[in-house]
Image (cartoon, rainbow over all chains, first blue to last red; front, side, top):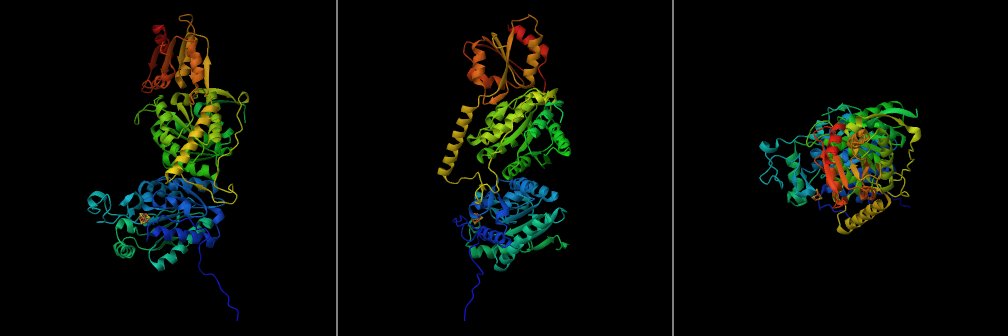
Length: 255
Length: 350
Ligand code: SF4
């Protein structure tokens, strides 16, 4: 009897072989691979440009074998908008960056691009702190969270209650797709790739603004071993940053 | 299109950009600058092949320009003095990525919000602010609408030749100055677009644009390349200027609206003083120093006129011989030097 083998997993073509600098257990490595797999599945490696922000995502151009642009802090969305204006008819443009960059100095650009319904897919890695700068407070840091700039824990008095930026995008008519998944649980990682693909497909066919937030862990700045970091973050974010598909072009808002 | 057109300085820049093949304009509307933006929108609607985009803020406009340039567009941007720091931040990134950019700075009275009237007090900020991280940017200073056309065309040439940001400083008075521009008498150069873009020009290999260089050797290499590029630029470009009356022992130096007013003042002298020469640098970087030094070699009285707290005099200092008698005159706050003021300043000194 002849055995037939089908390859069900392998090294994604769009992932470069350059060793990655991410710390052990960091979600950025998972996200990078998922994006590469999504690009391969959709066979769009030749037609896509990625824009990364500043911080731990800034070396993405070394890790993805596709056209890439590294943007200055706060300016990834404008750079992607300009690119999309120029090549958006023929190609896809996605942005991958951390929440410190996007929801901090990049917030205005994010909302304006969303309002205009720019043809973009924005993937935001939300790991509750500004990783590369040394674990500083980010706009999504949780109340009581200790960071390098809130050594006694984030307080409402100084910094207010953290807001779910992802769901703030829902009521903007120019936004076609909004979803969020945890990049640190096996089940959601599998779904995550499909969310990236969905986002890129929506951009390709419907030319809308798509947004996926990936909840991540930064074990280094949490000063925890990765399994412990997963456990703590999972319980801390529960009810605050839920996973799900919140908006699709087909069904409108589903909460 | 008609060969002769009555245009304001700001409009002349827009028209020249279109004729030079500019395909995108990104900006945030602010006083003085918006005349340019509105002209370009009108021409966009006339199907002239350019797209105008109003960004949410000036900094975003520059980085949209960055993305569009990488995507293959030939881009124009513009700010007024208030947002010059955003332009300088962008210049650092365009320099680092070896990308062309043409930015018009409509100069008005500052610091802070100041007012919308003309000043030349951003001269040193533009010249030295673009040197962030050892980057550099040519800085041009046209005065008349005809000069604005030539400077815009030249700015795109410099930007595409050296892959650098180029700044045009245009004071708010020159932006409003109107004259008939005879395009048939002007040579608008065709400029081959030769900057790197993201798609299909790397033999099928992915293209990467990053200004990050984490290791010292890589950054040293980049700095060395930048140094070589700057040396090549300074070796090949002399810096443009205009001169009236080359042989006189009295020399007036001014640019922008101050040069126009100085010219009017000098023309209205009727044997009240000996004839004076007027030297108008239309490029501040590179600075036409050979030409200025030659003009100064014939002079013994130097009059420097500008609209700031003496920035032009500070800039010219290294070129002024010790035995030269120096007179400076400035107006600030948005006031344009009046012809009578200039005349009496020169008369009193001589
Ligand atoms: S610092 Fe945090 S976010 Fe950055 S690579 Fe390390 S674990 Fe990941």
